[in-house]
Length: 247
Ligand code: ATP
Image 1 (cartoon, rainbow, N blue to C red):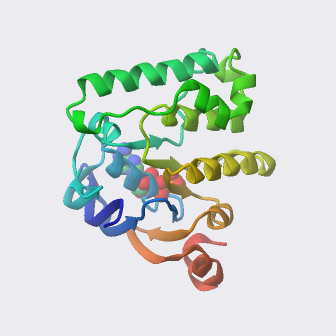
Image 2 (cartoon, rainbow, N blue to C red):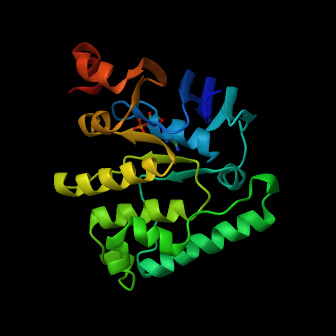
């Protein structure tokens, strides 16, 4: 059994049919990447998994640890161990790094207390563990988040997700807008989190960087999967890369 299974899902924004019969699996412990051009449906796929609305999944099944989570609300999906780090990072710019982390903890405790899926309610990393993973955030804990560099803000967004119980982390374009040197820092952070046992689904525009980090890759085009293989196979598949990724 895969950790996450998407079986022929079809998702819509209103009447617009965006995701078409999309099937993919994410195996426990791996870094899996989902690549595709602008508008191919990557963010929509992550939103379907995370239970964010819109979109609406009207057909197919999403299973996590064997449980059908299709159409489950975000809070309940999160209690089960899936965290989404959205593209816009969603940190609070006027709060300090420490306050941002504290708030993630408060929200997490609340959903564990009131969440409907109590049997899944275990907690995420302590603040000390988060600072051990991200020494840069420890150094800057009193700094307002809005004044952090792009890479540091991305690390804070990932750190906030780790404050929740996270078996599967969905990362939506974590490298966007970052300089190559900073991308390396974020890559190292993702590697460390993966080494600690969190499974990663990484959505990226930066195909080269994602292929370097990932074990396996899917390519999406017009809402459907057009490639499924190891990251090495995609690296060697010039035709697929040129046709669907433009690299
Ligand atoms: P990008 O890399 O540009 O973020 P993406 O692969 O993540 O692209 P999606 O954001 O999933 O693409 O968008 C897929 C399609 O759904 C696009 O045609 C987009 O215009 C459309 N779409 C996205 N969000 C909405 C929405 N809230 N309402 C209607 N259509 C939407």
